[in-house]
Length: 316
Image (cartoon, rainbow, N blue to C red; front, side, top):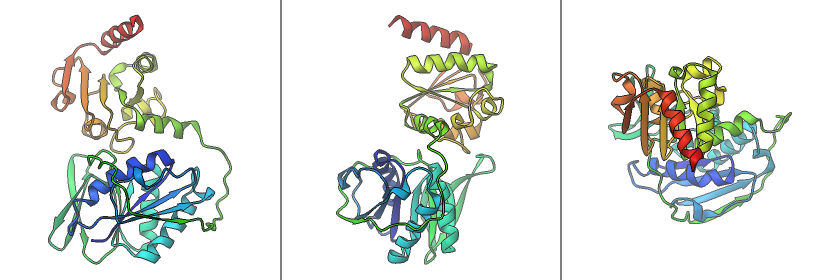
């Protein structure tokens, strides 16, 4: 099956994006190396940062910077018309999710977002994604001979190592767009990028009780060199901004260490942190769902635990 990987956004994130997408493509029948389309506006880091592939198209234009859905759709559609791949894979970022839906609609293709697995089956490939509030896994058939556009969950595959991508083709063709940029990148976008790149993550649940609770955890996160996110209830209660929400409908993360404080561990939240290298849960309820999947569980008061950790870090 002929597959193409589309990588977007800041140049330093494109190599890691491609590493995850290529890992998914490696499981496809036929064993063909994918091609990569890199759409960016900054300084290109070269093909060495990408996993092994059949070839790479680097399209570099200022129109791709910031929030650029119209420009990205025009360019991706143009490249698809030239190469006509059966399968288009995009990262599960905000821009990747949007482009997957828009490109799929423009092509009349099958569209599946938040894909967490690809399995060969009779008649095609099954795209695995969560359903019914993440309580079930649905397998959606992608039929042979029909174009499909997918966005992949960022934490579902172990990234491949860079391996060189063969021939690099450069394009600088102007992109005709009607979209007019009215403001610079906003702070919320930068906040979410920080959350996604964090090696140390603290996650606050409703059990922290108030905005004052998240203030304490923000102080602890800063002392640990990490970032603070929260469950949906924490965000909806206004204790953290929307861009800090973790879970199936928000950020799905893969930090080295994740410390969950005061969260019960419901399934929609769990998928956002379950790929952490080390997942530590703190809750006063020994029956909390969180303890069923965390690596280390501590039945304790979250506030006493946080204050104790903060004191240790402050002492040096």
